[in-house]
Length: 427
Image 1 (cartoon, one colour):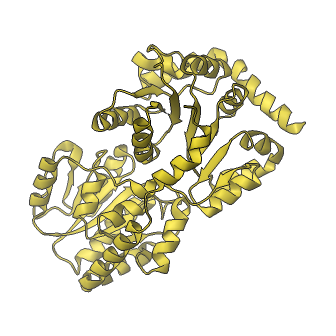
Image 2 (cartoon, rainbow, N blue to C red):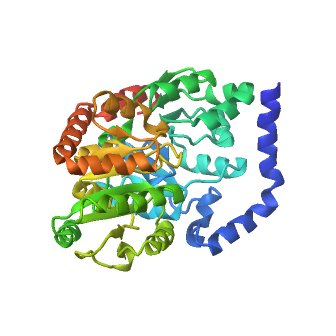
Image 3 (tube, rainbow, N blue to C red):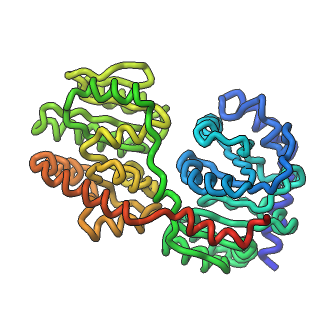
């Protein structure tokens, strides 16, 4: 009874706030977070026709989630499906254009995800009529799930992940979680821990430890730009801080550079912020320590005196992994769960990360068990480990080779996932 009441309350709340939703989106347009030319899509109104063939709807939010679906999308396209790919942000939408261009298929359609208003969802679903809805990672939208279920559209959660915090919140309303999660015909969880959480929340068909990100390399810059960057680096030692999140990790990057450079005179530290707008914060901290700093988006080039290179661009991380000797993975000191550990392993980096790898715990366990990565607790331990690696460069090669060999043996999860999906895909 409580579950029905809570579910109904959420449903009604959307109607209560309906008058102010246009004002919210007007504000978002003004601050550049929405596209006014395509705002209709956020309300569920498409301006393009539905293709005649069966259509699979894949809903992703972050760039990482989006990119992880590429191998599966390619397989589904070969099986003659149309793909409706939805995202939320303007940044991810621009990235979709690049993905569609690279895949070179006319059977991929991009739309912005509709808000979880019941009317928006009904309009969207009535137009597109997907044969299956695949939500990626942690996209739990109750109205969308309930309406899709009533329309008998198979619901799949792929790359299923739920943070410990969210998991505990759902446990407070266990009857509601059961009402929501048992509507999924299939949940494919990233690892065993996440799979167990979904089962405890009411999911009935959970497959554990299948991760599409295992098969997707990080994106690279074009060859001409990469060649120019390597030339400018001029055989210097390269320390990379990848996808760092906040002031804690900014401090970790700058402090590590200062400490390590006392031993490694030709050190270059490349910092790739998770969000490009962080560049100014990093620059400010760097200037406090009188470090020669260049910013990639300003088209500033590395020279022999450059200490810090802030790569505040999107879609080039693979090239920085390729160039680096040692890589610290962001989101692990800032309690964000960390980022994909397989990407730097594929490019033969020696990998270091902090205590929080909850988003990639299974891969972390494998790497640590095989002595193929280094996990640290704090900034002091971080720069101490980096110094030791540079003082004995054979260990850099040892860690990078081990990580590369281990991740190459993980296999391609796309075929496994397709076998699990097939019962729910209408031909």
